[in-house]
Structure formats: structure tokens, C-alpha cells
Amino acid sequence: MTLQQGLAFGLVGLTIAAFIWGRFRYDLVALAALVAGLVIGVIPAEAAFDGFRNDITVIIAAALVVSAAFSRSGIVEWLLGRVIPRLKTERSQVPVLTVVVTVLSMLTKNVGALAIMLPVALRVCRKTGTPPSRLLMPMAFGAMAGGMVTLVGTSPNIIVAGVREDLIGEPFQMFDYAPVGLALTAAALVFLAFGYRLLPKDRRGAAEMSAALAANAYSTDARAPDDWALEKMTVSALAEAGGGEVQILTVVRDGKRITRPRGNVVVRRSDLIVVQGTAEALSSFVSRTQLVLASEHRAPPTDEPGEEIDVVEAVVGPNSPLLDRTIASSNLHGTYGVNLLGVSRSGRQVTQQLRNARLRQGDIILLQGAENRLPDALSELDLLPLAERQVGLGSVRKRFMPALVLATAMLLVGFQLVPVAVAFFGAAVVIVMLGGLKMREAYHALDGPLLVLIAALIPVSAAIQETGGAELIANGLSGLFGGIPELAAVAALMFAAMAVTPFLNNAATVLILAPIGATLATQLGYRPDAFLMAVAVGAACDFLTPIGHQCNTLVMRPAGYRFADYPRLGAPLSVLVLLAGPPLILAVWPL
Image 1: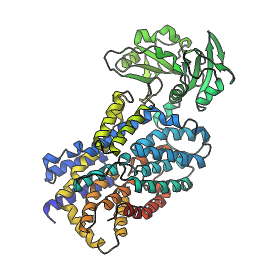
Image 2: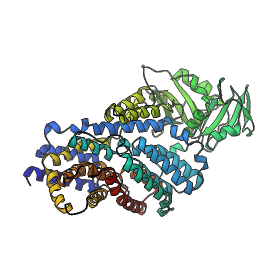
Image 3: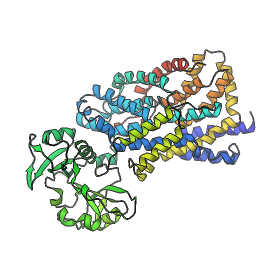
Image 4: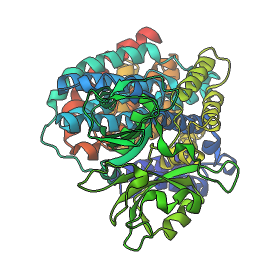
């Protein structure tokens, strides 16, 4: 072993130890490792920032933006609008919602797919009384399994494709993972449909602040436009379109109010309807029923071309000039350049038209306005903004556009017309340009710690390869693996990835193990594909702890999981993948 190899091994070993210790953030550890590698000379200065301009980082960043646009579009809720009310018990909820999030994770990054479906699952749990602890972990595991099917589904696949390109000049393509990934995903879904019974029922999740705010029920005015395609719908039909989450409080026709109308009352064109529900439920309801918010005919004024329109939640303060005044007399649009979209009054329903409602201290209101004008309006009106969260009501939804753009990008990649990084970067840009996501939302979608972790570790892991350390390890392993069957060698590498990733991080695991696996394959006289696939599958299947994969971390608090809950369901699933994976890999990628 040379001095440079020893330094490279020491750097990687200390980095792994710091990850396992958990005293410092992952991204900070990775950045410190990058600086240390520069100082001791195992990372050349000209290669220090290779990770930040690497295709791997670009693809993951673009996939995060596309996933956020999917979530923002509401297409998933729209597609599941008639299915979700039929999911009455956990026996139907677990397989259906797990399948949905699994399919989504094949199209977008798996953690993005889970983030899209998490609010849907929690609403189902609240309505039916199903413990979230029985539902959320199967969904997280399904998302991870589905991510194995396509290149962009999970970070390990993207990283392994980059390693293969460095080795043989050609990366894995978009659907090269599908034969193995689909088979393993199908097996995982069958197991999860029954195995969820291994999970506890008595866990109590910790509600996030955004979840608490999301429970606020707002009253708002919606109007049936003159060209309403759903003319003569009954009140009960409209309520059904709201999925049981929206109440029809009042129908106003020709100046006459019908308060708490019966279900057989027919809603006609030009009627104004006062409805109540959470902001997200109202947003989906208005979109699904093709109604129009009464305030939408007045676009908030902007100071600059291209300035974004935002929606905020705020509490009416004790000195607000809005107190005891009707909204119409306050002239919010003319004086302050904002629209009032809804009012939430604790313990009471606001059944009159918003323009006639008198605001009280403690009311929570939804204000729509240009992002540069809202802070001044909040200050002048003595309104206290609530914790920031995304509010869909009053924002334009591009329901089908993100799906069409993503499908186009995947077809271009599938037919090898453009590189993956170019296709997904282009898709992210087009989605933002077409209004599927605001620039601020796109920046928010970028997972900074994950991107920094990957970008900083790429040069660190390359140090093992460049100093000959990977070849040194491979020489040692080839002596151990030389006399064992091919199947056992592939299984051993997959097991190593599975064992390391729960305590390290799946991206870091692949960056370290993939070059070693590829070199080992060369030492044994094999093609590297099967060994790279084994590393990708092993790193993607992090079912044992809440810290190794973001999907596991994402569901921990809402479901109230403890560390020991993950092996209950994850250990048998890991064994299933470990038994089925190596034979499948060798059948598709023979040595």
C-alpha cells in the first residue's frame, strides 16, 4: 500500500465514521472530507469541484424539480378522486396507495413521489381512523422499490450509471434497470400487501406545523361561470366532488341566499356558492368542479414584469383596520393590491358572502398578491403571517403539463435522442417557463443537503479509484471470491451494500462501493454490469433504519415510528430482495 492509498483509505474511513457517529450533518461531513482531501493531496485542486458539475448532480436536481411540479399540479389527487373515498379499511388502503406511490417513483425521484402521496395518505387515515403507522412505512418501502425500475427513480441508479460510463464509456440507459427492478418491485408489493400487519398499531405521529395549519377550514366564494360545462349539478353532487372534505354552506342566486341548502338544490350558471374546507381541499374542489373563485376576476397588480403572485395565511391582529369592517368596504384590492380568498373563524362557519363578512380579531385569512407587495400589505393591515407553507388555493394549476413534459423527456431519453442530464434539465426549465412551478418553488424543491453531499463525495470517492485503492481492495476480495460461485459473489456484494447503506447513506454507499465492485469484476474476469447492478439494488433497498434513506426519514414523525419498527417490516423484505435479486441480475446481465 502506497502513502497516497493509505491517505485515501484513511479519509474515506474517517468520513464513514463521522457519518455513523451522526454528530454532524451529512453535507457538512462531506464538505469537510472534500477540504481534507485537498489538504492531504489525494484530491487534485482541478478536480475538487467535479461533483458540482457532474451529470449525476444535475439529473438529481432536475428530478427533484419535476417531482415538485407533479405535486403542485394536483394530477395525482385528480386521478384518485373517485378511488380514495372507496378505501375504507387498511386492507384496501395499504395495497392501493403503495402501488400508486410505487408507480410514481418509477417516473420521478422516489422521495418526491412519496412526498406527493404523503398528504393524501394522512387524509385517508384521518377520515377512516387507520393508524398512519400501518400505512406509511409500506408506502416508503414501495417508493424505494419502484425507484429501482428507472434511471431517475433513485440516486444509486444515477450514480451507478455514471460509474459505468467512466469505466466503459457508456452509461446505463433509462430503462436498463427495468427487467430486474420490475421483478423485485412486484415481489415487494406482494409482500407489503400482507406484511404491513407486522407493524404496530399504537404509534402516535407528531404533527408538523404545516400539517396543523393545513387543518384550518376556510370559507370562500366560488361562482359557476356563464359557460359552466357542469350546469344543473345538485348540491349533493358538488359535495361528492369535494370528496367529503368540502361543505356547501350557502347558494346565492339573484341576490337571494339559500343557507345550508338541501342536497337536491340545483346549482345553475352564475350562482355564487359559499363553501368551506381546508385550503388544499378547496383548491382541488374548485379545479375538479370547474368553478371560479369570486375574486379571480381581479388580478393583483404587480410592480415588475414576471413578478410572481403568492398566497399567504395571516391572523387579524388587535389593531387591524379591518376589524369589524366588511371586506367589500375595506377595498383591499384597490388600496393594498391584494385579494382576500378565504376566512377561517375558529369554531364558527362564515355562511354569508365574503364581501359582506365582517372580520374579527383572531380570524385567519388567505391573502393573494404580488410577492413584493404582500409584506407591506401585511404590515399596514396589522396581519400576523403564519408559518410559511405552500397554499394551492388561488394559484393556477397546470394539471397535465408536467406529466406531458416529463413523458416527452423520458421518450427522448428512451430513444437515446438526447442525454439524460440534458433531457431532465430541459424538462425542469420548460415546466417552470410554462408556469407549472414558480422559480421560488423550484429553488425550494432542490434538496440542498443531498446535492451538496453527492457533489462533495464524488471527488472523495474518486480518490480511492485514482490512487489505485479500489484495485487494491479488489485484489484482496478477488482472493476471497475467486473460489466461490458467481451467484455468491454477486450476492455478497449486494449484501455489503445493504449492510452499509442503513448507517451511511445510499448515495455515499454507491459512490464508495461501485468502483470497488467494478474493479472486483475485472479482477475476476467478469463484465462489471452485474456487480454494478448488485450495488445499485443493495443501496436502494434500505429497509432497516430511518436514517439511511430520505423516504424512511420522511414517514418517521408523521407515523410515530421508532428505530426498532423498521426491521419488523424491513428485515424480511431485505431477505426477500437478497434471495431474489442476484439470480435475476445474472439472468439479465450474465457475466
